[in-house]
Image (cartoon, rainbow, N blue to C red):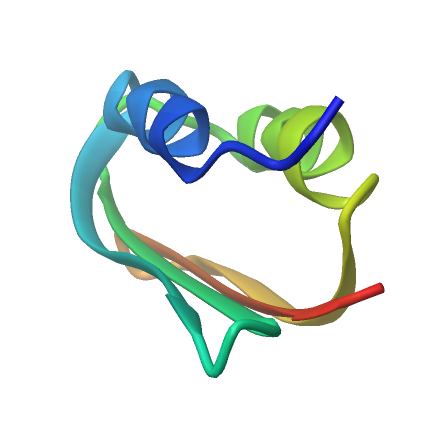
Length: 74
């Protein structure tokens, strides 16, 4: 399997409005979602299923109506 940004965006859009979901410099993934229905456990599952097999987590925050995270390529 390979990382698929479009599949990640589809999954994130189920739980909120995507403000940013981009790969920068081919190695950094940044995500910001205006949360509507997701919980912390929802975003933990998305990270585990869609992101962590390909990227290392740098930072992840959930609160104030937003989910924000940053990852770097393995």
